Image 1 (cartoon, one colour):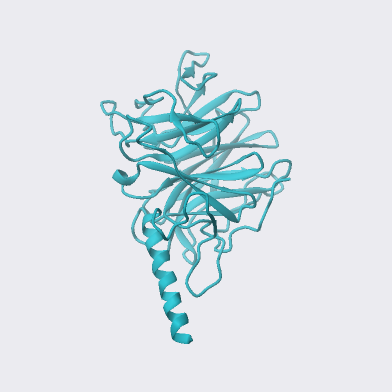
Image 2: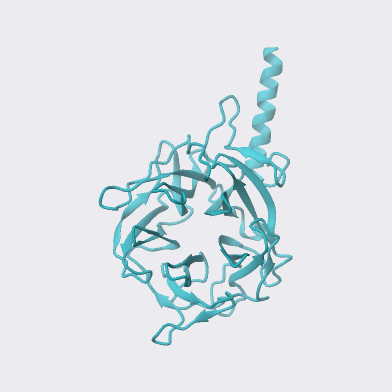
Length: 345
């Protein structure tokens, strides 16, 4: 009996390791199947990572009382030719939705499909993404936008070309985040190579509206910014967040600023998400989920297990995010237990 049990544990461990290395094998859940946390052979299921497979740059959002996470498939650039999504009713049990968008639907995208951001507008779901990791204005690629009738897609390329395909203010066109302001105006924050821009989206997300001075792309780069911008509003204040450090290194992290406007000025407050040598390294490129009607917040981010040295071996996690009495974000404690079940009423 003990021998059979040992064999079973070894089989489970092998399947899990294979699934982690690919994200799309028989060890991973099939489309629409439920997955709970990340099982480790011989131990109880734990909360973080929240689903199996190598996934990074997660955007967490709520649609129709359902939590969604839209991550980057973390693999060599040439294999990053699709996006998967995950949905949950309780933050714990997740369903995988495979290939909601891939290069067969985006003819100009060839590789390095990165860091999606999504928003609902008038019953349509707009999915912004980076592709091709362009290094100059002479290459094809940049930031695109796709559209679907449902959060799980399938998504179709809206423009047939990138929305942004050039370097403006030295910002590489990657890591886009779409933001709806209090007055209903939509903005696109984006930028790699240590520069961040904001642009005012037009009504159908096919282009941009100039600012009062005639410019399209306004630079708002705060101190120590590298990539991965994100913004939310709490108590009337704009919290602007970003990633610092190198994405393959242990010191990848998240810092933030607070302002009275979506344009800043953004004075860096502090770092609030970073590695814990006892838990994981490279904790960064995040998003934030707020439970509607409550001052209850979660940070969704990726990190690298202590056992991994491959830069692409990143997994998606969720932990609580809290504030002090002055409105500053408390340092986030990264955990293996993750968060408790939380349904949306």
